[in-house]
Length: 222
Length: 222
DNA sequence: ATTAATATTTAGATAAGGCTAAATGGGTAA
DNA sequence: TTACCCATTTAGCCTTATCTAAATATTAAT
Ligand SMILES: [Mn+2]
Ligand SMILES: [Mn+2]
Ligand SMILES: [Mn+2]
Ligand SMILES: [Mn+2]
Image (cartoon, rainbow over all chains, first blue to last red; front, top):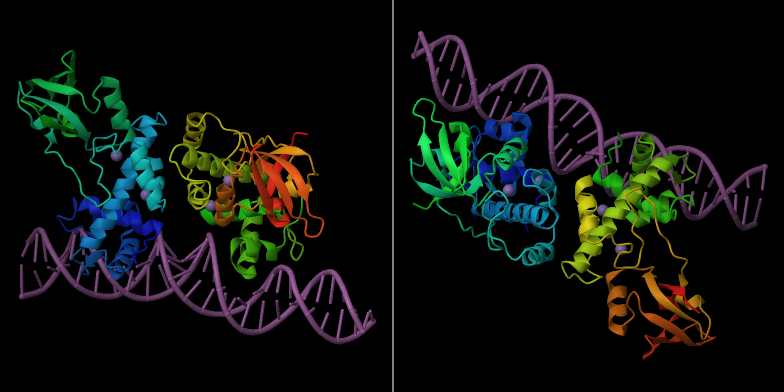
């Protein structure tokens, strides 16, 4: 039976995310950047993870995640996001405060705990950052979504997620009222720098750089 | 600033409990039994803990916990018991299922989390096993309590805690209806083996060995 | 096709936490 | 007071996870 250590779980989750769910290869260097460890440490960990058959590792050519690895990663992601919902909905954390705590809580090992937590929260489908919560079988309901800056003038949509979930960025969004679920309409786009003017919830005008808009993900409604 | 590892926290908590809050010495062997590790491993850990000044360690003479150590231990106990309340009250765990999960949850590091959890639970004073929950300063409201077998015939009391909180014992108590808060009255005590007959909640007669009764703690009401 | 630059792995250390086996201290009983 | 038993510590080894420095493979540029 597969048992991963705390550190192995973190690496595996990082591989899952960097490969966007197993679509691409992940390089040692990218992983070392993500994990804030040295490439040498990553090489070592990759050897261990491939012994446990959660990744395919070919020296010098990066790794891909195996089916078993994907399943394991999805369970960690599920736990991470459920705990984030708990922190925001029940303990009144703001969405920029939850990540680090969830980073620890995701490693608690108890099937029963997660099943009960899921029920207690009303089986939420999305976390506070708009990311989908895998179900107990690892199935994910993903919505087709695009960065806000790729919408055209006059088009409308709804904010469903953020790409960058650093505390600083999330606090900025809070301040300007661009929360998950907010309805947005593109009023104008500046050719020169790609910045845009948007209408939030049919009442608030907002100027936004292309950079910021690129980190806000929407589903298009018209 | 004091930072303890996961393993150090577990040892320190064990020392706190075995010394009954810092009253007695704790021996290497007792600790090794409690922690299910070899005495040699304990010696090693004691060296590390005494370097961090949470215990006083004199070779061959066991350890005592320092004031700093007591503070740290009480914070872990606080977290453990608050999580137990959460599991029972909110996630509908039974009182014999919570211990192992709380044993992991108690190590999550976030002041904010614990403060919010405490509020969310309505600042409970006792955990599901009747043990007092230290407040954020480490102060404990303890009730004078005695083992059920030390009460005399005709005396009444209320169950407030259990000494042995193994799952098997807790399930037994559940079955016979001896929950925390139940009112009990001693109807008879058998001289020969110390077993007793008690009345539970003024309606249910129950026979109980001295051994079982010794693990049930009550406050006397008459 | 070489060479230079960059990415990756290997080698050798270290710290935490565990183990077994061997050495040693302390208390007790003769 | 001496011998013996038991508790405890020390020594030496292992695994995980990290690091630095050195070696080597791959890729890009000339
Ligand atoms: Mn994590
Ligand atoms: Mn999230
Ligand atoms: Mn614990
Ligand atoms: Mn308890």
